[in-house]
Length: 103
Image (spheres, rainbow, N blue to C red):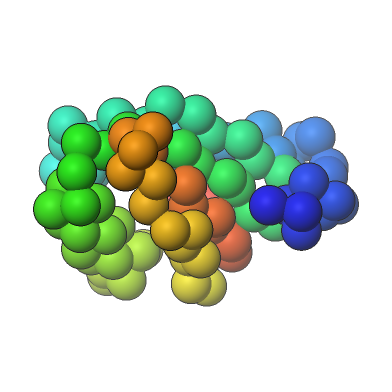
């Protein structure tokens, strides 16, 4: 979280990254029904908050995200870093780096 907070920020790239993330979550069948509650992007990474209901939902979400991140048309060139799921607050925070702007 501290690394994200202090990361370099180019507003134009942040807006591009935000648009890519929104497009991925709204158009990918593996992510249908996923509740992206917040997406905050910087120049080279995004912090995503996703609503979950329990550990099982968290595990399924991670499998689906892995499919999206590693698929043939993946928009992410490097690994996503996952914070531990916060079941008590029904959310998972994910840090995504290396976003590619694929149209």
